[in-house]
Length: 232
Image (cartoon, rainbow, N blue to C red; front, top):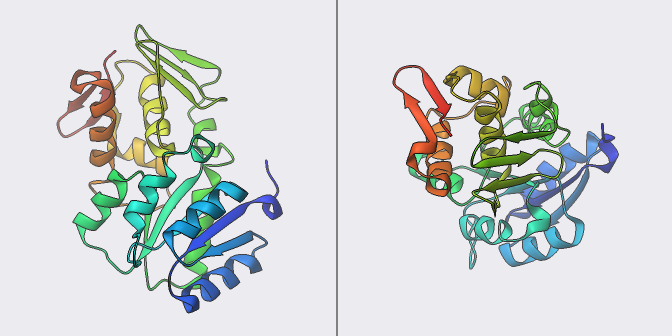
């Protein structure tokens, strides 16, 4: 497991006091913290340091957080970087827009320092592979149309490579690990997001929809009142 002093976090916010407050509390925990006060600088810094986690404000001038996230997701070297929005906007439409842009999670401010640090630690456990380790699958997962190489973070669908954000990759890996098995929503939340991470009720639905857009509607089935299963 990677030592904490090598974990890089990029904070992006146009308010200096937010950068100082969040940065100070994360640095106290031993994280290597970088900052940017707008979207363009965030992209430059992210490509320079390749952080494991980006905490990104939504409401910024010129290039907002949603657009910044979309741009960040275009770079292969940031494919494994977790992106979490930190914002005062808690409306459903804002969260869905964030997930559609490729975000992995959503942190609503104001937030207590201890809660913020716990949230960051929960997010970073995914970087170390703890969540996928719990799935008790290893090597390459193969079906008739799908191949998943977890170590290289590569997904092939009908022989063509798909670039999936971290959450979509983890969700597809879980579902494909046991073909035709129905995974309950509770199992999905626990395995993909972790028990300590609080996410909205529509989080799974958004990520399932994004996967269906790439794999086809029939690839993932919905069992009403129970959960989801991988059909291919």
